[in-house]
Length: 196
Image 1 (cartoon, rainbow, N blue to C red):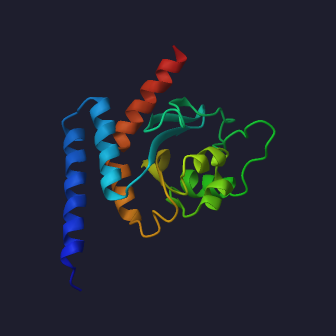
Image 2: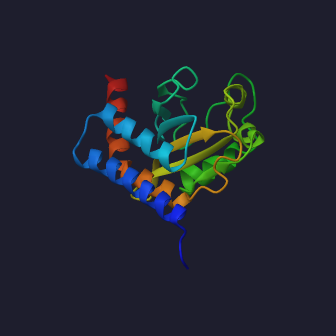
């Protein structure tokens, strides 16, 4: 099976982006440079209008470590879940979204990428769907970051509807695994700061 010149060029671009990210990680660059390199890599490989990184622990739930839009998704603890339960506490008295439990199972427990293709998918999984819609976001790809078989966080990219319909999940997993140790370190440092 032969590849077209366009496919070869795209594969070369992806490899270059991944190599640049790996070089930054290998050189132990400062955190700001690493976040920018990760942001750039995901933008070049998949594209995004919003990119966030969440760390997950049973003790403190979800902590947002990085966001390209801190007005929409600020940094810091996103919620406090009961021990052993990664589900987000509902906002106000609203019940959790219909597909939230399935999202938790797929991303946090099974370590599989979750893709929302249209705005209604965001509504079914996320409490802040109205804010996402207002920001003209209609699709999402949540890429689990795993260490030793456990999900420690996720890379979350959002854009217009159907942006990720043809996304190659393998590339997302590759990026997530490249940054797993970095994200784990930053998450541990953030957790230590909270306890001081």
